Image (tube, rainbow over all chains, first blue to last red; front, side, top):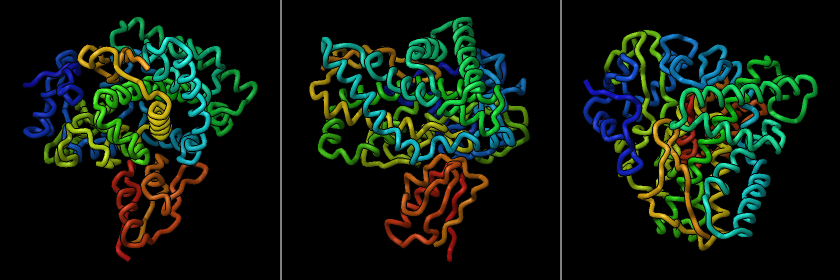
Length: 389
Length: 65
């Protein structure tokens, strides 16, 4: 039986692991040996099947179940009260209460503030030595500022958040380091929630509490928004900029026709599909996928990264094609757990690319892409993106 | 063709509003609101078809009149 330990390397160079591609064409519902865990895992690799699994609550997300592959015993840093770790009816209740915060209109209203944050970061880049690391200068601070402001985090605490959430998502960190970072963030958010219980403000946490969220639910939500809205967006920003500098013809397309920017953002999201382990589920009964019966109690892994390179849905899937207009990708997942903050991520990416094109005409890589260090296994991204401008 | 939208299964991702802003909106709770349930054949209908395809909770469908 094929083995996996969730650390198969990406290939070509950003696509899914070769093993997963082979499964997609030969064995799309495959039982693998999850060597590190001493049990099997069903790898789902076709686009349609991935969407089917992720939209079916019988493939459970409830991480309080001891058999769940993302149970806290296996995932340092998992905390209770997060909607990603719930099934209905609790999931429906809590997500339903918060989703009004992320409507297309509300997110669009953030644009001027996001533009201001990006412009200030670029001002600082232009005022300095004209070379440095884009992750540190822009890609990490922007999402951190945005989510911090949505949660009502005081500006002086942003550095604390950035440091600890970087450890939380760093696959090189030890389990002890990740557990400590989790505890620090959770404690901070608990303090924030308690302050809002005393004195409500004009932030998401205050409004959730007013709408009936319990203290634990507010903490879980604050934690999730912080972690999910931070590292992921940062990774996509740096990967997108790297791609445009490495493939100047793509950058030229955006210069020639800025109106294609939203399509370019979707295509870059599809191409990189940075969140790799969001599709872990537990089968709660015998369930049929693509004609194969997955027995109750099985671990199921819906591979969004491989699904987004399914040639039957995305012809020439390894080519970045801004004209594809592929809004049907599953980079944000699919089904009821699809990313809550996806429209914020899209907006941040769009503004960054637009401002970089407008304001940093000499932006260039200072090391070849082949020498960049990539974050693998969990959240794909770049540790640094050394540039000159 | 007529749009059927289930506000019960809607998870407020807003993908329909991106795909077909003439046909869909969201209320203050994020739930889908159908602005025009009978899109004209052509661009408007194509946009609604995309919205149906990308809706993550499969809350949308198009049925014959």
